[in-house]
Every structure is written in C-alpha cells, then in structure tokens.
Image 1 (cartoon, rainbow, N blue to C red):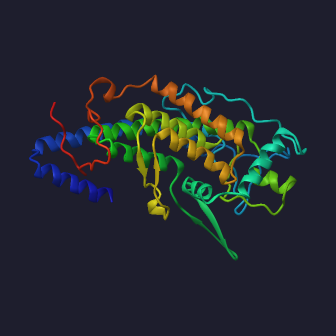
Image 2: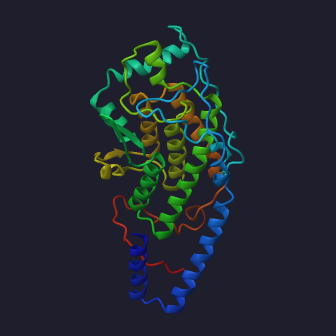
Image 3: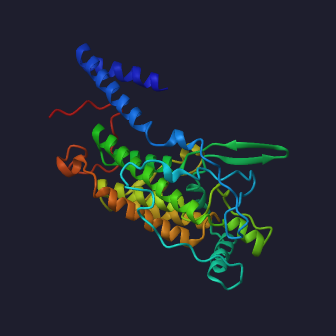
Amino acid sequence: MMESHYAQLLQYVRDAGMSKKEIAASEALGAEVAAHVLAFAKKDNYHESRSFEKYAISDDPGTWQPTPPAYMEGIEPHWNTIRPLVMEHAHQFPVPPPPAFSSEPGSAFYQDAEEVFTITQNLTPEQRDIAFFWDCNPYKMNVRGHVMFAEKKITPGGHWMGIAAIAAKTAGADWAGYAEALALTGISLFDGFIACWDEKYRSALIRPETYINRYIDEEWLPLLQTPPFPEYTSGHSVISNAAAETLTAIFGEPFAFVDSTEVAFGLPIRKFNSFREAADEAAISRLYGGIHYMPAIEYGSQKGKALADYFLGKVRWQKQDSGLALSAERKQGAEAEPLPAAKEE
C-alpha cells in the first residue's frame, strides 16, 4: 500500500512539473530524515524492555488479577522505562493514590465498585452507544465453544490520530498543517501512555470485574471486555485529555467536528462541539463499559491535562509563528485536496 501511494505521489509531482533533480534531492533528504528518526527510535529502550521480567501476580486481594475470557498476563509492565519524547520522566505528573482497598460494604472502595455495578445494569441506549464507540479494543478475544480468536480493531491512540486528521481537514489545513497536527497529537499520546502505565503498575489496582464478582455479584459481566492490565489510572482518560488539550491549542475552541473514525469498524459517526467534549465522553465511556471506577477516570483526566499543559509549553508550531500551517479563516467542512502542491513562500 505504501509503495502504491508513493508511486502515485511521484507521478503527481512529475505531472506538476517537478524536475528530476528536485525529486532526487527530495528523496535524499527524506532518506536522511528517516535514518535520523530510526537511529533515535533505537535508543528508546523498547528493544531492551522485551527481555524484562513479566508482571508477577500478587496474592494481595486489592491487586490486579488476569480477567476473562483469555486471562492474559499484564501487558507492558515496564512501559515506564520507555524514553519519553517531551516529559522529563514517567512520574512527572503524579496523581493521588486510589482509595484504600476494602471489601467492606459502605467503604469508599466498595462504593466506587457499587457505582460501576449499578450504572452498568441501568444503561441508557445513549450510554451504551458511547461505551461501544470508545471501546477501541485492539485485541478483543472471542470464545466460540473450544475456539478462542482475536478480533483486531482500532487502538485508543489510533482513534485520536484519526480525530487529528479529521480536524486538519475540517480546518482546511495545508499539507504542513496536517503533518503538524498529527505530529503534535502523536507526541502527546506517546508520553501520555508512558505516564499512565507508570501509575498503573505502581498501584496495580484490582479491576471492577474481579472485585464485583468477588464481593457483590459473581454473575456480573462488564459491557466491554476488560483490558489485560491494572485499573488505575484510566488510559482512555489520560491520553484523550492529553490529545484534546493539544488539538484545542492548535485549532481553538469551539471546534465542531464529525468523528467518523469508527465507521470502518461498523459503528456510526458521533458529533462533537469541541475536542474537550470528545475527551470527556471518552473518559466516562469507561465507567459505562464497566472497565474503570470513577477515581481512575477523574484523576486520569487530570494527569492527561497536566501533561498537555507541560508539553504545549515546550513546543512551538507554525500557526503560532507564521500562520502557514492553517488557513487564516477556518473552513468548516472544507474538502482538502489529496495531494496539494506546496505553497510558495
């Protein structure tokens, strides 16, 4: 697919009058940039982390345990060792610890679990739609008799990258504006996941599904499949707010857009008046899905916003400096050309 796209691009620039010398120079610069990026990426500790120890399950009743149907081991317990792009370190944006674990009815922890239990049994059609729209489970396990197989869909980060592309198109951005929106959103997501996973495996908190089955109703099932890693904080809440604050800084607020990211996966569009509205919905969707308690959602959102504030204070983009990246006047709903020619200086 990439080779086909590249062949079309080459034909496009040839037809537009670009000389062989200009094409060769552009390809050489592209190769140089790619080599730099690949060399940088090799030093992010990902390769080394592949040989780190797996997460060890604890007997502590308040800690995370593998959940149905696959009972997978904890995913990426050492993700906080991955080198951030902008953050100084993984624990730079701490949040309060979750409520102290307790199985006693009336305790704060029991009440948080009871809230999940009660809400998931009385969901409105709209709440169910919200939960499924933001599920973003890239590896949903299905069981059919004695057969288990995975259904692969979009990731949470992929969903927000899709929103970034939709926003750039809606704003009538030029090619540089598209690249900038995707790059800045991608950086906020990258560091957001590192910050979130740092807390997940620090607190290693029990999931609602495990807690409710033990202490409230052994037959209860969440609406969505529980992901295979600890509960606190909510990944959706952290990265959605980090991305939303970044996109708000780029495109402003209010910014009405139609999110069609999930159409390819059989879900309808949803409309939002701002990126923050979308982030709020993504965060609360985890309560509706039975995936998280409210503290994980609230403090996860707080962590994502703090990260974005720091990130946005460290970077600059063209709209701030020269106005080249975006049109001076937003073109709501404008159709962007698939391969627009570069602007003249």
